Image (cartoon, rainbow, N blue to C red; front, side):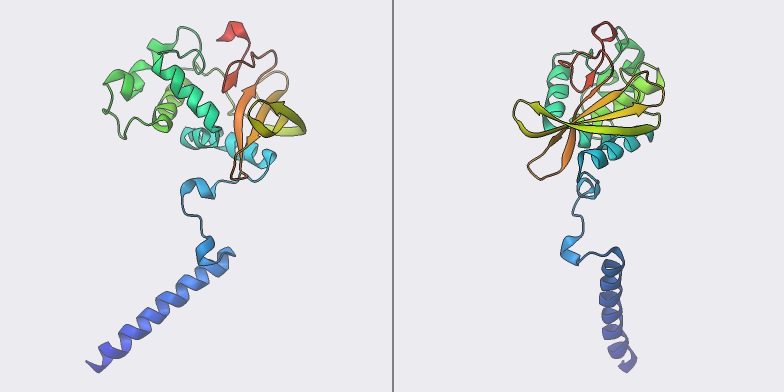
Length: 209
């Protein structure tokens, strides 16, 4: 009985010390630890946010790609999805090729692994589009940042265009970045040379949509 009385308090102390040590190693106080997955994403500057976005794209992590899109871009995606308009995300006349790989389309609402939230449908569509080679823009290649320019965009106070070279895409690619109320930077739009800037989030030449 005596051993149990001694061991239990010692165990509690060890757990507390270990927890504090882990926070110290990370350089964070316990109340500064990221609360959600989104909070772990590096979005502190336009350029860092582009790197986070393009790295996720290269890993086929389209959930993260969706989270880094601006809320306006997410809204436009969902709005067009409800209108059965896929021209903003897929190459022309390619929907039937990806249909069976997207559970919401093939089996109906609620038939997938998760609820039919925007991030889940976006992830499935993008994976299927890459599988069938019908992405409007493929950002899988290495992305090299060349320069950044201040821009203006309705309803946003802070807008920056990050100009990049992307392996596999001819000409310079523009990541139009907007600042969220939190201070994080998000991707409003990706524009390829000659791209139609009315198309969000993928601005491609009109004939490609």
